[in-house]
Image (spheres, rainbow, N blue to C red):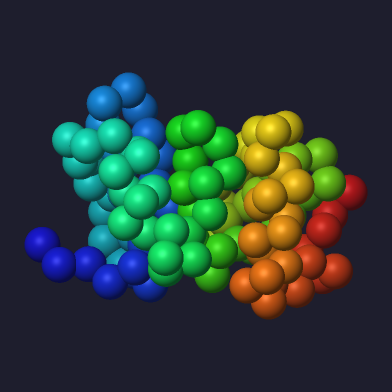
Length: 104
């Protein structure tokens, strides 16, 4: 199966498997760890927000000051404390308008 990065909303790692969530189809379970996809998708702008989540910033709906992100599929993703500054910087560098997204 061929998938364009723009079709992926987010990836969620669970143990030695990764769930891939798409814009246009049901999620699939892949038998690789999230780190493998992180290396492939990082050049496409994907952001590692937590040890178990990799997101496509094109589908960020809302960024919360408390350290969570709401995705276009209404999933709430935690940002780890250690990665918070890096995630915000990456969102800013990818021209995501944080001023409209930052909720209290």
